[in-house]
Amino acid sequence: MKAELQKFIDNSEINKKSIIDRLKKSLSKKEMENIEEEIQLKQLKITKSKEPNFIITMDGSKRILSPFLKERFYFCDKLVDGFETFHGIDDIQKILKSEKFISWYKTMAEDWENSAPQIFSRFDVSLLSTVNEDDGDYCLIVWQDEKIEPEIWKYSGQHEQVFNNLYDFFVWMNTLDK
View 1 (spheres, rainbow, N blue to C red):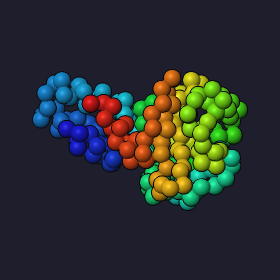
View 2 (view 1 turned 30 degrees about the vertical axis):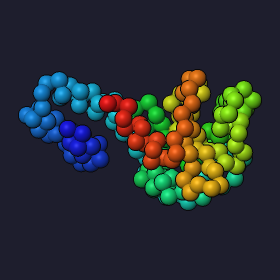
View 3 (view 1 turned 90 degrees about the vertical axis):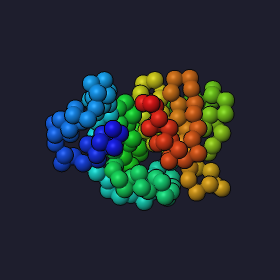
View 4 (view 1 turned 180 degrees about the vertical axis):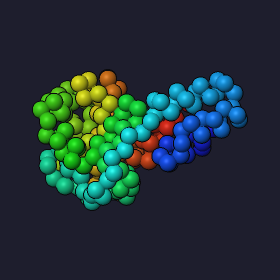
């Protein structure tokens, strides 16, 4: 079931109606309703990549992309998956310079004990994605010198989640529906 859905998402040349027709023959009505809902909610919107080698950090420096980040940005520049927007390199630079993000970052550094903005230098932090910029729902990339892959720090509402790397973050995202 998930494999058929992934084929649909991955291959834009496949006719949606033909997949739906094939799935209807092999799945129960409830399974089919769940798949149709997932297709509508999870439809990926992708902008092709310029294949960058670096990303801008909070202090305006350039950090070389780690292997996982390089794969992510080679796959696409900007990706919208449901409510989460994974920004392209140019968008990241604009958001990091925006008054709204700078204000959020400063507030986090001053008021949220042990938050990434409070404990890491601005050279070690960049942006991965946003869910809601107005509410401060951001996902940060955090480099630590001893690690090849940066950590991902997700802030949503009053919650913070830390992932070892981008791969672990994507695994977690894929379990949200289950």
